[in-house]
Image 1 (cartoon, rainbow, N blue to C red):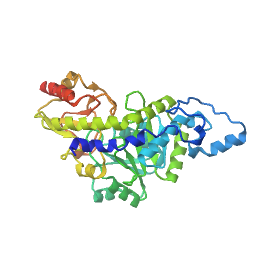
Image 2 (cartoon, rainbow, N blue to C red):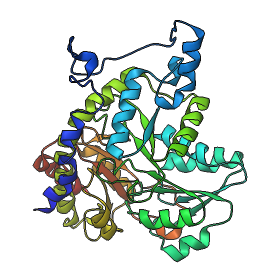
Image 3 (cartoon, helix red, strand yellow):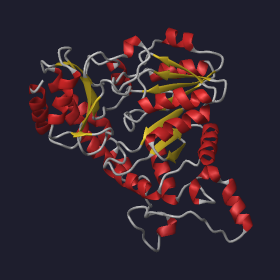
Image 4 (tube, rainbow, N blue to C red):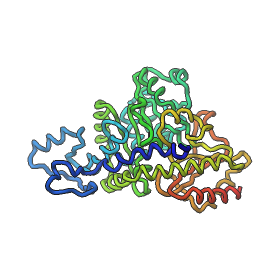
Length: 404
């Protein structure tokens, strides 16, 4: 098996599951005499009508079973998507929310409280850091940023009696460190804290609950949506107690998603496996080519042996995603890099990733780090590889790099 086939293998294994999740089962007794549409229909609505008060009260008491007495608690198409995401993550239940950032913030609000302490990796998603530094701080939650490649003794030294949450993001935003999730879980649980994992990059190829996570967070905008036309997030848990706490928090915060975005994401799930298998193969081909280019200092791709945490990726992941970063040689200036990016024709300049289109985003100057060992000193940019042909992308990058 080639390296490219290996990073795609995890996605290929998902396909039989993805074509069946979150859609009607023609063998269900309800459809035995009528037949059914292939896809779950879009269900729009705010008010839910009941035949009597007793039924309304009964439905209201079953809010943990994905029922609703009002549209703000979700719609049938949202609940179908929730069941599909929970199945992919091998979790108990999922709460769909309005965005990936909302998934991070809702989870943090659910499992922290005033006077508590939260550990967050220094390489985390920038908006998550902003939320922690501002709103969580105002609510009386103290934040400590830790090295994403921290070892067990150092992590234990950071734990406190009031530590409520160890947050993880693997790989880290922009610098792609792979974290030791089983170790983080072991330490967190030894101190009665919960491990929350932003699993957006690893969705479908990393089993969060098998590795000890209590909560798995996904930006469904990325891989599942896949077409850059829907913004959604998800929070998945494995335990009933955690589900009740999460569901209550989501209802109290008014977190839900529009039915059209849920339907688009369910549709995107059908092809996620084949899309990501192709994109991950192409991404590794492009990453390998870039790693040999004289104007490139290093390529930060988890499946490359010289990337931080490669051994952990090899141990814990069944594949790799299409997103990675490129660090240029020290002789390159930031201005020159930006001219190079502007010259690219196959890559759109955009902040998202995981869709069908290829994207580039400069990361120099826009990444906040607290720890010196996590800071990038040289011009760098991030690539999200879409469904383009690898040769076309390499030719475009080669032309751009010639301009440096």
